[in-house]
Image (tube, rainbow, N blue to C red; front, top):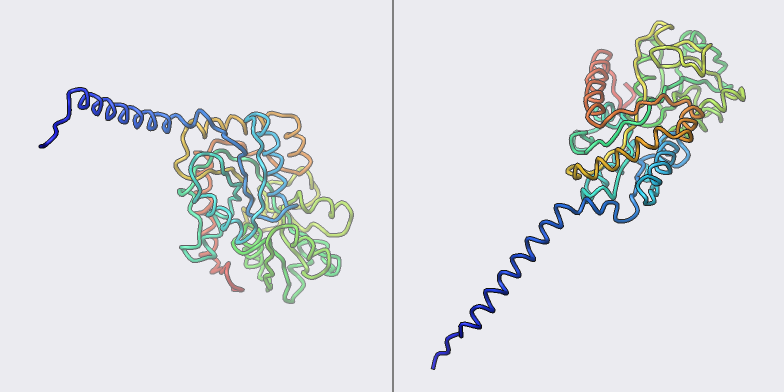
Length: 333
């Protein structure tokens, strides 16, 4: 004989269904407000360059300051390679919860796409930019073995020049290639993976000249171990007032390095706001201001939206330079 459920059983089942529905709703609500629990642990800041270089030092200074405001440690993780493309793509693929960030150089977005295949390039629209950090001017320096004391010595050498860069698709490479094209100088490009090995190469006379960030070069310039030939900033750098700009020397090479902190696309606004607030507190601190001064960095502390607009403008400008001078950043052209 078929058994029918009692009214009590029916009501019990209905209550169970209602409870499950409420629980599910509660989970959705918790998911939508989970940003209130951020940070839930260490916030990793990945750097796509080797330890000891300008990008790494900036990351560590920013991380130290922001960690105090967030109330969570921000360990810096170095994963060098491909001008930061490998590290950036790895972080971009992580959950968009703010627990994983990446410090990116503008050259990765504005110049590297001119040197690699489209599927290897990093698109700024695939990231959420939290904040801009600083501007780092490039300086062209010469080894002692080269005998170059000025830019005229280099342009008048009448021979092939070996020059080091901080990597394929970097501002360092673009600046030197455009300069050499405009000056009708023949050169062989020797790319390294960051500023530190490029500096080591010019110190050891493995290359005759190299273009690196001023903060990396200054100690060796002051020690007289390398000679500054020119800077690529629009105006003379206050830390090297006697060194002419490329523009003063007759060359139009408007290249500088900019940096920003980014998160995976889709990071909740509340989380991005917390991160931005932490970075802004860091920017105000005397310790961070002193760090910028010590490393010859010009503050470029702007919101993420402005970073995106400016970097896209730089990308268009650099593309026009490469096309104008038929420059290949992936070869020796």
